Length: 345
Image 1 (cartoon, one colour):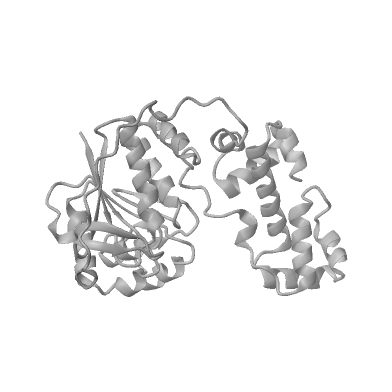
Image 2 (cartoon, helix red, strand yellow):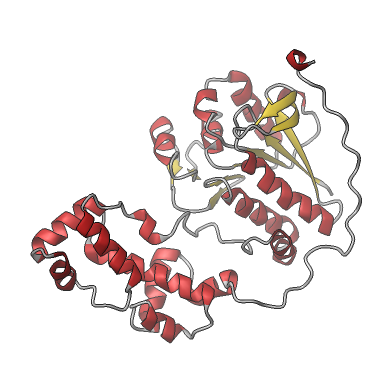
C-alpha cells in the first residue's frame, strides 16, 4: 500500500524542512516502488515562498480529501507569527485527526502544540525554539536535546536537517532498517542516527566565557584531553586559586570545571570512534578517559548509546557499500507550468 505523506508549508517556511524528508521518502519510493507519495499543502493553494526565496507549488490544506498516512508540518522563522492563523492551525488539527501519524520538523512543533496535538506529550524542537515552546505550552514536556522523539502517534524533530533523521526513522519503521540504510547511503547521509543522539556536540552545550584567559583555557581543555585537567592544574594554568577558579569558570560557562572536562573528553572519544578503528582501550586512553570501563560509562551518560554501537552507526572509515540506487532511474515526468500569481501576470 502506497503511504501518502502530506507536508504542510506556509509563507516563510524552511525549505530544508520540506526538501530533506521529501528526498528521503522519494528515494525510498525509487528503491521500493509503491511505498510513498509526497504532497505539499498550504493554507491557500498556489505558489508558496520559502524563507530563502525559493517558491514551491502547494495544494490547499482544507481541500485534502483522501486518507493520509503521515502528516508532516515544516518549521521556519515565520512560525511564531502564524500561531494565530486559525485556518492554518485548525487545518493541521483536522488533518492530524485522520492521519495515522503526525510529525513536525524544527519549530513546526509550535504549530502542533497550538493545534493541541502535543498536550501531555514529550516533544523536541530546534534548541533555539525550546524555551518558547516551554513557555507558551506548559502542558508539553519539552526535551531540547534529542534529534527526534516519538510519543505515541506523534513525532517531533529538532532543527532543520534532523528532519532527514526523522524521515529515515519513519522509513525504517515502515519498510525496515535495511531499506532505510540504502536510502541513507543513496543520499550520502548518516545511517539513521538514533533519536536520542544530541543535537550538537557536548562542548557546545557550555557557554563561551567572557574572560579571554578562560576562553583560552577552554580551548586548551578541548585540544588536550590527555593532559592533567584536574581543578588544581587548571586553576594554576589560569593563575587563580582553586576556589576562585571553580566559581568563575562555573559562572561564565554554566558548567563546573569537572563537568566540562568530562564532556570534552566524551566528545573527543566520539570523534575517535567515528574516525578511527582503534580499540576501545586506546580510544579511552587517547581521549583522557583512562579505561574502556570509564569510556563505556561516560559515553552512555552523555551520548545514550554504547561506544561500539556508536562506531557501528557513524564510522567515517571507507567501507565497501552495496549500491544504494537502481542502475537506471525512471525518467522524470514532465513538470506542468505553474500559474503565476495575479500580480505577476
